[in-house]
Length: 243
Image 1 (spheres, helix red, strand yellow):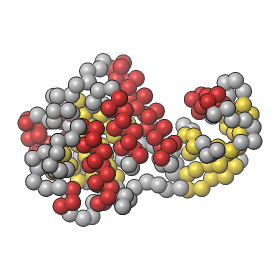
Image 2: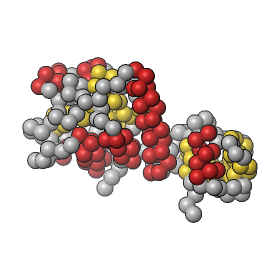
Image 3: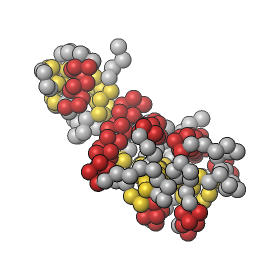
Image 4: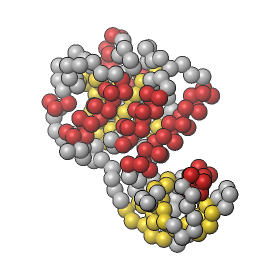
């Protein structure tokens, strides 16, 4: 059996006995049915992994002993901040999950003119919590030991107007240059992905005012969730750690 990787929301230290979070305890104790003496691996977002042994399992709690730790850096040298105009239902969840597997460092959900998602504040906050849990699960699965933040949703222009010291890219089907023509080296990228139907003409003009570079992925028009993952993969191949 593969040793389970579990995220812990608080800093960890070898030699300490700790209780797993409620979600983790439920997964380890009730789903995996693990018991005392079995091994798990924890990570707390510090870019370390912690070998641990289960010492006690109760109905609602699991206690583990932290045995040892080591740095395990699996982060890409390319920092990608994804600005994703929100898509409906599972499409947004899929984009978050897969972009984190591909090494994205930060994600900001965006509202635009053609955004099909309409949520009040309460529902949006619940979505944000759900998306952060998806980010954690993606890290547990892919081996990352830092959990990217899912920022609160914001308006497209407000996001574009934020100060940024890296390259700013906007995917556009009629752009004149591609990712392969971007000059090397690049360490930081702010990547804007629009909604189904794309950005409006006014929004495209707005991104140009904030010095976003239009780039083309290819001759075919991709769905928004396909666009994000294709662009991230291409950027990681050219500037990051995919080869």
